[in-house]
Image 1 (spheres, rainbow, N blue to C red):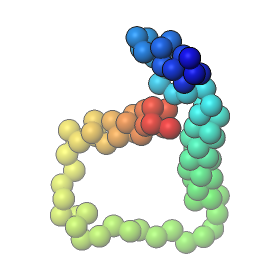
Image 2: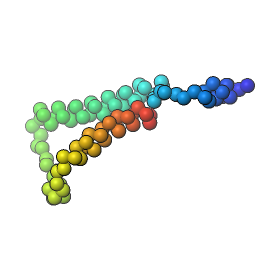
Image 3: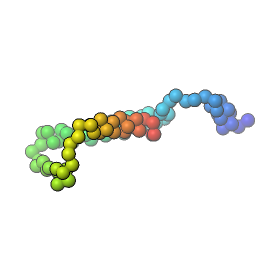
Image 4: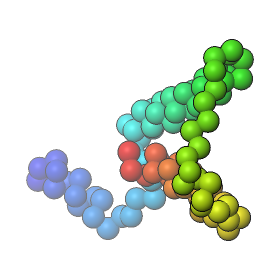
Length: 89
């Protein structure tokens, strides 16, 4: 029996509860950490620098009304992205 057939036999009826393989944990955490560092660094630059700040609001932004119900959808996007880092890597 070949090694591949042995692995298939052992894992055929078992469901894996792991969302992320062992070999992908470090790259996933590094990616997530890198995104966090970019966010924190840009926040730091905007807070402590004397560089000019620009308002990128357009006329369309002023036309579209703010709806409080969409906050849940907006915040849920972050949860989906976080799950995506761990489940689809």
